[in-house]
View 1 (cartoon, rainbow, N blue to C red):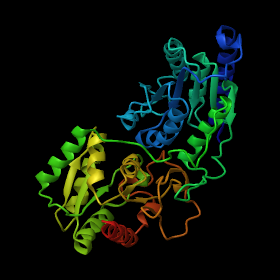
View 2: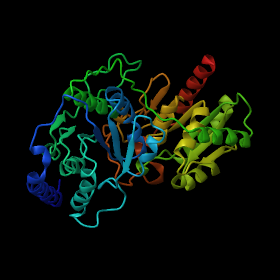
View 3: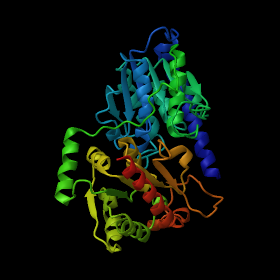
View 4: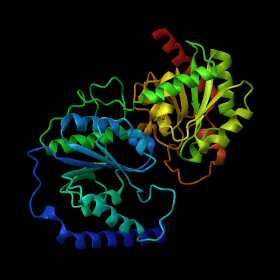
Amino acid sequence: MDLKQLLKRGARRGLLWGLQGAARPTLRYNAAPPDFSRPPRKLLLIRPDHLGDVLLLTPALSALRKAFPETEITVMVSPSGAASLENNPQVDRVVRCDFPGMIRQPASNFLAPYLYALEQSRQLRGRNYDAAINFRNDYWWGALLLYLADIPVRLGFRWPESRRFLTHEAPLAGPEALPGQPFSLSAKHSVAANLALVRKFLQLYGQPFSFEEAETALYFRPSEDDARFARLQLSEWGLERGQKLVALHPGTGATIKLWTVKNFAALADALVENYGVRVVFTGGAAEKEYINRILENCQAEHLRLDSSGWWGRLAALFRRCDLVIGLDSGPLHLAVATGTPTIHLFGPTDPAIYGPWGDPARHRVILTKISLPCQPCGVLDFRRGGQSGGYCMRSIQPSPVLEAAGELLHTAQARS
């Protein structure tokens, strides 16, 4: 860490200390301890980040709703993450927030995040929340917001800059085990960490929590309009009944996580030649140019779907597919939520944290076969990979992906 970063962190800690001290005399919850003898009337959940991260929150939402069926549950998310909660019966209210540090535009000045926290906290105070959970482990701004919003019970992860604003905290690691699950997943997975916070929260209110009994599957249900769109689209493409369809989603949130144009093209053509499937490329406006380049390198003709702003339509299409292949991205988590088998190509990010939350027999992770001591680095805020991705991604060959695809397609055919 250089001198500039050290000075910035020191100034931030000073501002946080000052805000905490200035606000303390005005906070009503100092007058009386919180009441844990009855469920909270209103519960606020904070989950910044984007579509995939919010989708990974849905098992925690199911657990909270099961424990507190009468509680009004509000989820504060970024505008880009709100679509993951469409048609979700576990949520009563969705609030959109331009979380500092989570939006692409830089802050206008050093004080902007703190002033925005004051502005947002005034709006939250009017809702009279009894309790809140900050689900991102390193997000001090969320913990500050809950403190300034005068919420009596504030739970979050044990992060140095967040702890001063919380009433209760949980360790950064996830639960020690996930017994009773039909698949083996790391205890540090994002979903497991969310469930660990829920377990801690329910313990405060004397509510039992069992991983064996919890509904831990990702939740997303496309609407009937979305399903109708998918049926019409398949008809327009001329897909015959029983024709196998494989979706390739080449897009992701950081250029270093991209796979190469030539590898995607080679994979698409090989899927058609080896397994007789139809291939559809999916993606929004951000992926348009990239998909165009892939299609230019293909020998066979493939379908494409512009999924810009249509999270439900994309889910409905994925549900019809026999397999979805892509990178570490929100749409691949969406495919998992629909129950369709998936293949995820991972490079700089850790699949133990962000990998598919599902049966590994149906949801595969592909890594490079080259031993790289830097993988996973978790560094996504630079463009070293350009439009070809980092070396960890470029060195993934199409052959292991094609082999895994064949196994999953064969398994799906055997089950049908």
